[in-house]
Image (cartoon, rainbow, N blue to C red; front, top):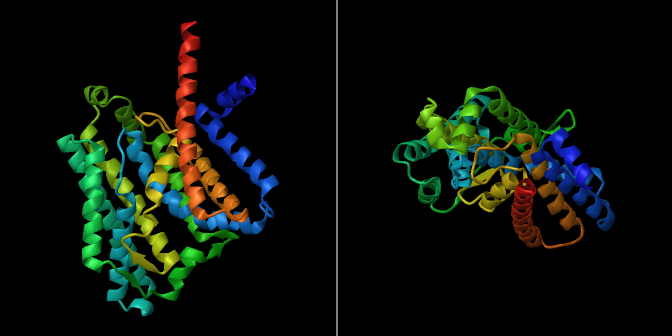
Length: 330
């Protein structure tokens, strides 16, 4: 078994082996224990549910790689969705045209990008801890959204928007295609662009990155701005799926995005991680939820098991790290 794990680590990377083992384990367990698990309905459900959590996880990913975090991802997404909803309502609501939706998308991206940029500026220039800054931003965005909507929701959009949330293209759900495009974009960013190298350097050692000549402040502002833009994409997808927008949509996803990132091999302290293992980890979490649903388990049990999985992953990673260090000493 050890030789098999070593070969997998050498071929796929140490961060990919864990998610793949978890994927195989989930497929075997629910393939045996759940009726009709291997069916088009199951995998279709996963394909439609994956993008919302996946896009928010991508928004969380870049800050985590710098050694930070973005606790405001869900509320940034919702506020961006609200901006899009108000533009649509200002241009006819249910009778709005495709041009109005284009303006709404621009408004959503501008809102998400601005929220992210404000966060990045505060972190980069005040050097306050990202947890404190993003927690403050989360509270601010939530309060602002509830003030502007009075705790209600905004609905009444053109029928063609439902295609973005529920339609299919070439047999694949449109939200999934958008998510896959974003996965590819993030993969290229981390592997082909200087920004990807720079943010990993910051995550490894921000002082060393600064002394090596990197503009760490600029990179941090860009990282959180990109995080906000990805939140806006998630907000548009949620708007299309629910045909409404409210401040609390997707609130439960916040900690799950962190779980998915850590399950995908992201270093909690920053400096190391890839997009593809995180993508596999997201599939594992969605299959776990669907499998439990087929077995008649309460959805809250899936959330509880996600928490247990997070503890197991962190414990296993700590044990494996300690074992590797003890082997080096001997």
